[in-house]
Image (tube, rainbow, N blue to C red; front, side):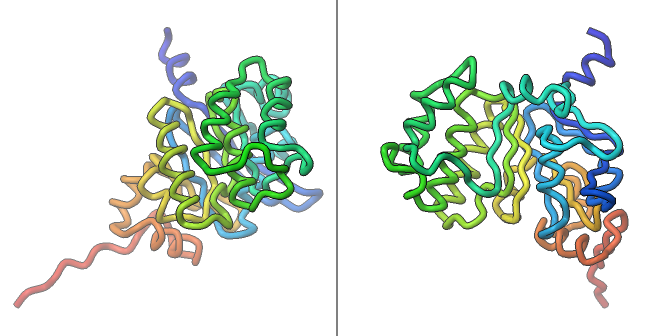
Length: 259
C-alpha cells in the first residue's frame, strides 16, 4: 500500500474549502476538517453557527456551494444512497412514524439495510429503558432520542453522525449516551462525529475538537493539545473563541512572582 493510499484510508471524513449557502447567503465558508478513522470528533459552535447545515451537507441532503466533502471516501451528494448503508445518523429532533412502536420501526429499518441486527437494537432499547411496544408518538423526548440512536446503530455503521444527541435529556440519559454509546463505539473503532452543547461531557471523550464561529473554523485540533495550549478547560476555551478571542494566540500563563 502506498503512502498516499494509507493516508486516505486513515481519514473517515474530510472537507476542503467547503462552503454552505442558502440562496445567496453563505452560512459557512472555507471549512476544512479531517476526521481520523476510529476517533471521536466534536464539532462545537453557538446556536446558529452552522453545525446542522454542515451535517446536512455531509449527509448529502444539500450540495456544497464551494469546496468538497468526502465521507468514508465517498462524495455524499453523488453517492448518498450507497453511503447511508455505512453511516448511522441521529438528527437533532427525533423524527419517526408516530404510530409505529420501536419494535416496528426496527423491522421497517431492516428492509432498508443489507445488514441489520434486531437483537442488538432491542438490547440497546432495554438498556435505555425504552418500552419497545409503545408508539413512538407517546414516548418522551429522551426515549425518542434513544430510539433514534438504537436505530442508527442497527446496521453496525462504520461511522456515526450525531447532531446534539443529548439536547433536552436529563443527566442520567446524557451520561448513558456519552459513556455507554460514544465511548463504547470509539473503543470498537467506529468513527463518531458529534455536534453538542454538552462541553463538559464531551471533553473527556473526544479525541479532536473544532469550533465554528462566524461561519468559519475558529479552532481545530487534538483535544489534549488544544487544552494544553490554552491551559484551561474546554468550556472556557469555547467561551473565549466564540466571544472573539484569537484562538491562535491564547493568553500566556502568568507564573507566580515571589519576592
